[in-house]
Length: 89
Image (cartoon, rainbow, N blue to C red):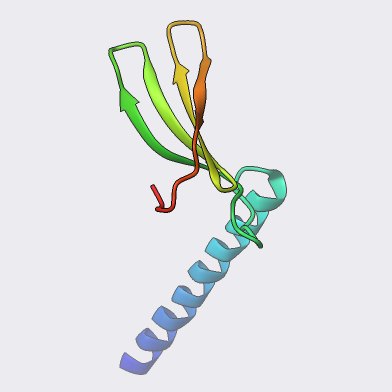
């Protein structure tokens, strides 16, 4: 009886893992999940600073440049592009 219980547990584990992998693949095909980046992401959110209850300052990286965005309160504005520096943010 012990071997049959271990075999049943092992098969159950394999079935659950297969279902998880299948669900992930279906989510990517359906557009619900991101595809893994091949060459890296070109656009990334670096940091968010809440200014008050409505407004936030976002630091966004696009390729090797950074831009400050002020979002919220019904208006989104580009504060400006930051000059590239020798160090990474």
